[in-house]
Image 1 (cartoon, helix red, strand yellow):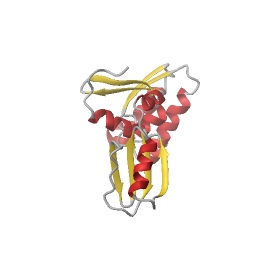
Image 2 (spheres, rainbow, N blue to C red):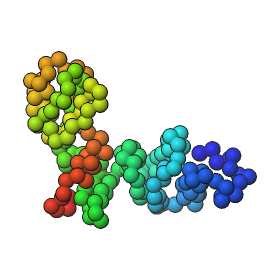
Image 3 (spheres, one colour):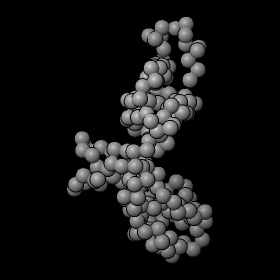
Image 4 (cartoon, one colour):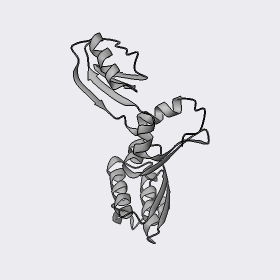
Length: 182
């Protein structure tokens, strides 16, 4: 994490990101079997984030140590976590391995480019448009594709994939859960 350059400085002279790096490294110094980190990459530049993630992955590979961490960065959660607990308003709304959480909500992501303006799909639950790139989340990717092609037969760059964790959590947080998901 390039902490050598900080050796001649007091911790009170370090930036927020430098302090965060120092805190993460000191968490691993005694070779603990359990590490608890709160927002491990907060206030850190992209290169530093990648370095911290690599350090964490290397330390915990092999599976005989445990990391518990909190994060608002879903790409960080997706790359580091094997088991996820999602909380909303102090309640657990989803818990389990990340693949199970993704499958639990049965969502698919359809993306394509279209020259049509304001294209809507009734079969989709969520829509995002940036210039000519459309992205839809829905439960039935076949229905979304058929509806999109009926609206514009000149679609291009069509792609169907699993949504990422952030897209699933946005749906989870926007829905009012009636019971805790197990």
